[in-house]
Every structure is written in structure tokens, then in C-alpha cells.
Amino acid sequence: MRSLFVVFALIVLVITPPMMAAQKVELTIDTSKTGAKIDRNIFGQFAEHLGHGIYEGIWVGADSKIPNTRGIRNDVVGALKAIKVPNVRWPGGCFADEYHWRKGIGPQRSVTLNPNWGGVTEANTFGAHEFMDFIDQIGAEAYISVNVGSGTPQEAAEWLEYMTAAAPTTLVKERAANGHPAPYKVGLLGIGNESWDCGGNMTPDYYVSQMKIYSRFVRNFNPAQQDKQQMLKIAVGPGGDGPRWTDWTETVMKAYQQHTWSWDINGLSMHNYTVVHWPPSYSSVGFGETEYSQILKSTLEMEGLISKHSAIMDKYDPDKKVALIVDEWGSWYAPLPGSNPGFLVQQNSLRDAILAAFNLNIFARHANRVRGANIAQMINVLQAMIMTDKEKMVLTPTYYVFKMYVPFQDATFVPVTFDAGWYTHGAVALPRLDAIAAKDANGKLWLEITNLDPNESVEIEAGLAGIAAKSASGETLTAPKVDSVNTFDAANTVMPKPISAKVQGGKLTLKLEPKSVTVVSVEQ
Ligand code: AHR
Image 1 (spheres, rainbow, N blue to C red):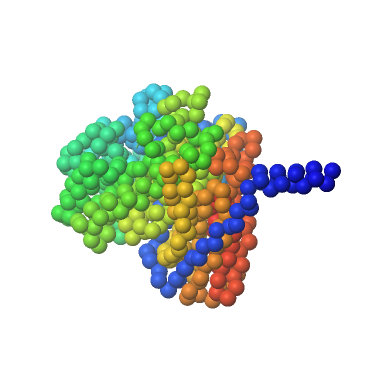
Image 2: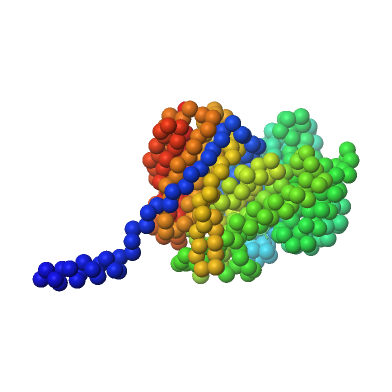
């Protein structure tokens, strides 16, 4: 019996993998060396008339049984308020370059088509007034993309007059008759969308001539936006890193360098999806470590892309007056089986949470040039914050990352240095950790650390030069598997939970779980 027990114990020893000791990583945070402000607009959202992004996702109509305020669902508004959405880009995307704003105002709405996204009918019941009501309810600014592709400068100019003017013009009276006498504020104006492709397949030179005309004539007349809070005009920028895209950035920025009093731009847009290759074929559900590591490797290409286009912008705009606005980014996977492929429906997993943290950290590190970004898309489409199914709503892992990052909005960047070694899987090798730090308006220090390694935990010891730290507390987001998701039936699988962190002798220590996103604040 005894020898049998010994044999059994030996077998257990052989087949049980040795307990992995957590990796130890030292971080240095020097709070005396602060960088640029992390513009809260990098946490912007994108809401296009596409699938169930607007209809069902936001708009259910005043007669719906789903609790709503003037047709806009209350549960969605509540969730978005909690992540302090700075701005929402609307009405597209490709949809914007076929959108005619008049069809979406007044008591009689025209039913049109949405040829880009499933060829479905567009009821136009959600138009300019409904959008402005929505962003007012969530406390965000409007980022309106005007139609450069199939519209005219006059149509766009009249839209902005209708929205923003205070003087009693015929258009302003029409706005008042439609329920809004006071002028609306429009914070950002997109001059077209992907004009190199779905927005009209223009050459860079042709686009620049259009851009100048729209910049000149599409004015914001809101009296409150003349001296302060001026509307930012965003030109179409690159969609990749090849010569086609560097040529585009060169052409727009060269034109900007020679701009006169009569036109100006304040931003250059950039679009970059994490897709690996087109058409999107990676599954958003039921994947393993191989797809996890490949997608994360691909998403880190954002860093090189921003550096490349920023360097071109620096040539023509060394004072960094023109912001780089990454107004479409996020994961783009194969459509969920059974969904309309034109509706771009995908699940959102822990992998997407880590992907979101990586991209937000890249934007923060480039805060002196990247002063805006809009994840695609806010609800029910691509890398969404929120998914709805009739009266049900679920918050995604990406939503929770945006919630955890709220303290970084408008905080001042603080450099972090560390060497955490590499995580490898097959042919993929990635830095095991990513981290950013920032000081908020009250001087409180915030630290975000992502441990992308799905197998090993990491023990952090962070030196906190420049502050008398007393205590620390925070939250971590992780889940049992890299493909863990929140569903309508199991909504709390991927949710932040408190993490314990210690401060002693000017050092912060904490243990990061594998595949986790952690945000910690330090009390002084
Ligand atoms: O977000 C989906 C689409 O992706 C947008 O409409 C377009 O701008 C981009 O190609």
C-alpha cells in the first residue's frame, strides 16, 4: 500500500507543471518629469448609421416599451454617462458621405437607403435634433462629419447655419419650429470621411481643393464658439502606412503649411483597424492563445503608424498646431455567424479590453500630437462599448477599460520606464507589460499597467520619485480565458474588481494577474 502511494506521488510530481513564480518587474515613475496633457478627446466614440448602432442601440422611439427619454434609451444613456464620453462622431463613416441632413429633420422624414451597410432602409427618424438631444443627455460634444462625397459645400454650410446660428435667418426659424430655438454647439467638424475610398475615391490633390472650399464656407455661427470653444475642423487623413498614405499626409500638410486667412484646419484624421488582413477573418469568439497573440501584435502597429505620420506632420507643422485625430480605430473581426454581414456584428472579449488599453496608451504617449480618437463603434457594431438586444443591454470588456481610464482624461502624462522582458507564443514576441502614468488636476498620480501574458502573473515594484506616497488602491480587469466575454445571460464575466496595492518606503508593490488591465491611484 505504502509503495503504491509513493508511485502515485511520483506520478503526480511528474505530470504537474512546476508552480510558476511570478515575474518581478521594477518600474520607475518620475513625477517631476511631466509631459503633455492627455486630451480627453482620445476617449471619443463613433456612432454610424450602421446595423443596430443607432436604431435599437440608441434610438427606440418615444412609444417604445424600453424606458426612454424622447426616444433615446435610458439604460444606454446611463452607461455612457459613467464613462464620460467626450465627443461622439456622427453620422458616419461611409454613411456620412451619402447623408443629406434635410431628410432627417422636421415632422416628415424621408425613407432612404443605406447602400453601404446591408442595403437596408434608413428611416431618418434619428436626425440632427435627435443626435444633439442624445449627446446632451450623455454630456458629450458633437463631432459632425459633413458630406463631401455626394453633397455640396452649400448643403454642408446650410447644415451648420441651421445648427449653430443665432440670428433670425430662415434656417434658424426652421430649427426653432422644429423644437430648438437656441443654437447648438458643434465641437468638431469632419470634412469628409475616407475621401480616398468610400468617400469618393479622390486623389490627395483633388481632396485638398475640396477641403479648402469646405473649410472656408462651412462656418460655425454659434456666438459662444467664436473666441473660445471654437469648432475644430478635421481633414481626412491616412488609412495606412504605405506610400499611398504617406503621400496623402504630405499633400494635406503641405497645403496646410501654405494656408491663408481664408481657410484652416485644426486636425488630420487617421483610420486604423486591427484586422491583420482584409477581409476580416479572425473570429471574435472561441479563439485561443495563437489568435490572441496575433491580434495583439497587430494592434501594436498603431505605434509605428502614428510615429510615421507624426513625423510628416512635424515637417510642415513643427508647433503641432494640427492634431492627429485617430477617429476610427479598434478590432474588426469576421461577422458573427447568423448576423447580417453588413451590420458588422462581433463579440467583445478580454482580448479586446487589452487591445483597447494598448491603443489608449499609445495615444497617451503621443499626447502632444494625438489629441483625439474615436473607437469604432459605440454600440452593437465592431469593438462596441455596449450591446443591446431589444430591452436587454450588456456592457463589454472594452466598456470597462474606458471606465477605468476616466481619471486619465485631461490628466498630465508622467513617464514610466521598465523592462519586463518578453511574452512569446509561436512566432509572436511582445513586450510582456505596457504601462502609462499621469497626474490628474488635483495632483493625484494614476498608473495603468497591462500584463498581456495570459499565463504568468507579474509582481510590480514601482519607485515613486517626487511624491510622498502614503497608500494606493485600484482595480483590475481580467477573466478566466482570453476569449471570455459578457453576454446577456452572463453579464459579469469580465468586470473590474478591486486589487490590493501596498506603499512602503516610497515604493508601490502589487501583483498583476495574467492577461489583465490594472489602474491604480496613489494617495499622498
Ligand atoms: O466603421 C466602419 C467603416 O469603416 C466606416 O464607415 C468607414 O469609414 C471605415 O472604412
